[in-house]
Length: 467
Image 1 (cartoon, one colour):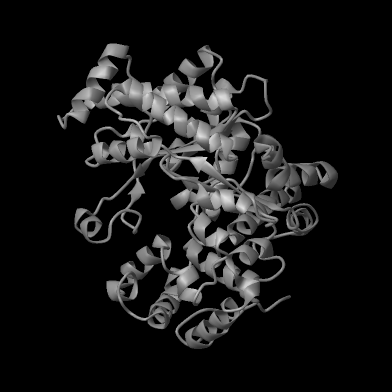
Image 2 (cartoon, helix red, strand yellow):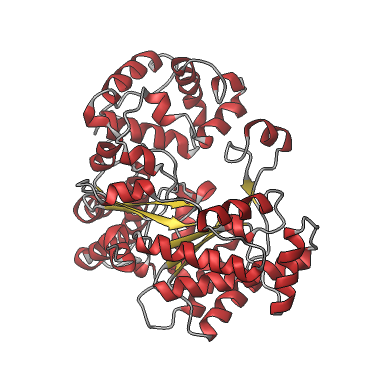
């Protein structure tokens, strides 16, 4: 029995789980089809200065934990030295037990740096020096960090205004990991936002024509979708609190857009009608290009107005929302399906209360045309932990076919986050191994092993068919 905390059979509780993981899942390549990595850092093969640079900067999961423990913001997003920030994180780690951060931290130290010592205040300085020394070598450049975890495809997320210069650079290089992108037009959809008009002005500059009417906006977005498509994009993504769906007329949408462009406030019903119209337009475009569309639903963002003013978005002030999801989501998918313009779709929910909603919703629109055409996405954000992933897989198993599931993604800005795939695979194998042990599944390793390999890799490879 290994004395290491992270060992070969970590999270694997019996021989069936061990066999499934080691023989069918462990060595499968990674298709990370949704993340927020910087394509610039990949294209330039960035060398990180130290462990804080790659591991703590930008990681709002860690920031929230440190703040909860009472760590001063100086050591989180402030002007403390990188070493002092790391030491404060190391002091925090023992207090994160039962939070997935504890598992992730030690998996990442083991997989990237071959460090199996527990991170705490005592070990902090030695681990800081050892990891930072390794990060200074070419073996630990951005590109090599992705190779180290057997990544086959990574798909970043870009705004329609992005010129995709770094994706072009990577496409024309000999780098073996495919780096693709996902089109995320939320800023063009959320018409009630404070910065909406300035965003539309920036989009107009990119397409090189004025955007004064709704028709202009549609032309601009079509232009950018075509540009993204020409540059290898095969996915879109939307981060919305909930889907809006209200009946509208074309003249209403024209009036709403022109009203907003004139800096006049719009009502809640006008906002909902506009969001409905523009989302239907976008989704029909995705179908035309054969893209996969993703909907990340249910986040309640920027709750702390004071800290949002100081630090901006994506700095750790978001939580799970309790929005109504089913009716409008069904209406959107049905409107698209009725025209035979529903493309492959992945639905992610942030509120675990919606697990069964999503697991049953996908069955309404899986029409037999494509295996797993509409997917219930893996546990996301606050739910990408052992309990959250298990509940998502149980809901999917009970109400759909987990055998068609396309598996895990990192949804991360961190180049050290890829052991989350391993974590997911171990949880999956233990879930199935436990049911084999209890006699709830047959001891058919060939078939269940194939299912594990499919969920770990093959289903995603076939679903996305990255070119």
